Each structure stands twice: as structure tokens, then as C-alpha cells.
Image (tube, rainbow, N blue to C red; front, side, top):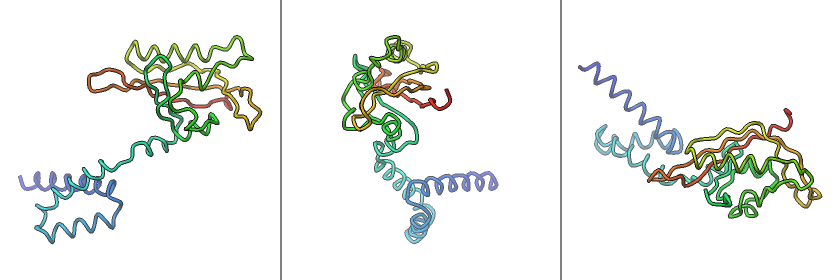
Amino acid sequence: AWVVWSTLSLGFWGLMYGLLLMVSGGIPRTLFMVLLSFGRGGTDALIPQYIDVVTQSVRELDFQTLFESVPGCYLVLVPDAKFTIVAVSDAYLRVTKTQRDRILGRGLFEVFPTNPNEPAATGVQNLRRSLESVLQNRQSDVMALQKYDIPRPVFEGNGFEERFWSAVNSPVFGKNQEIIYIIHRAEDVTEFV
């Protein structure tokens, strides 16, 4: 019994130490917390302090900054008629040559319209179909390789730039299992086509 208790205890403390190290700011603060807890009542006082630090750190996380900094091209869309853009990663902005304040709150197809010089373009149609599939089937939709030209900014002479994309659209469910957002992940694969 002592061996089982010791193993469980070490596993618990290892897990708690790892969590604390991950969210508390590193080794110096972790060591300070351990020493502080022993000074205030030994190992029994350590558990509540771990829980308090982890809970407080989770509350202090800035999820907007985390999302915007993620190293991938992501949009968060509202499942309305326009598929309104409500969040965008920095990587997506770089790849599409757009600015956050100019696309947030606007419809996806307003920001990324069909290239008028390509009458046979199917990018908008295929992306809309994928997003509607997510809403209807309530599951992710992986799109086939897609040609979808993007508008060039004014400083690059306007017009459109040819691009090819690999994209996945995924639902985000609310508390009542309704779809509250769609996450659009796109990867520019133009250089491989």
C-alpha cells in the first residue's frame, strides 16, 4: 500500500509541478511557491496553492492574443448569411495581405470576392458550399485543393493575385450544441502547384 501511495503521490506532485511551471512563469516562481508552502504548513498547504495559481493563471490567459499569434492561417466566422469575420490570426493577415481593422466585422466574400477577370472562377462558390456543409452536417469539411485568387492591396497596384489553398472549415459548438462559430483554416500551397 505504501508503494502505491508513494507512486500516486509522486505522480500527482509531478503533474502539479508541471502545470505550475507551465502557467506560473517558470522555475523561479515555482521554487518560491514550494518554499513558501513549506513555511506555511508543509505539503498539505501546497495543494491549495497549486490549485489557486493554476486557476488564476487560466483566468489571466489572453486568448485573443494567443489566437492571433498562432502560427497558422485562421479565421473565425459567425454562421450568418455573410459569414462575418470576427477573428483572424496574424499569419492569415500576412498571407492574404490584409489588415485586421479592415476585415473584422465584414463578410468573408465581401473581403475576398471572386476575381472579376476569371469568369470561370469557382473559389467563392466552393468555399460557400463548404461552409454551408459545416452548418448542415455539424462536422468539419475538408476542401479539395482550391484556386482562390486574393485581392492585391492598393500599394501593389490592386487587381488579383493567383493563389491555391488547402482549407478546412470546422464548427464550434455553444453550450446548447448550436454552432456559434466556424473556424476556417487555410494553407497557401501556391508554390507547390
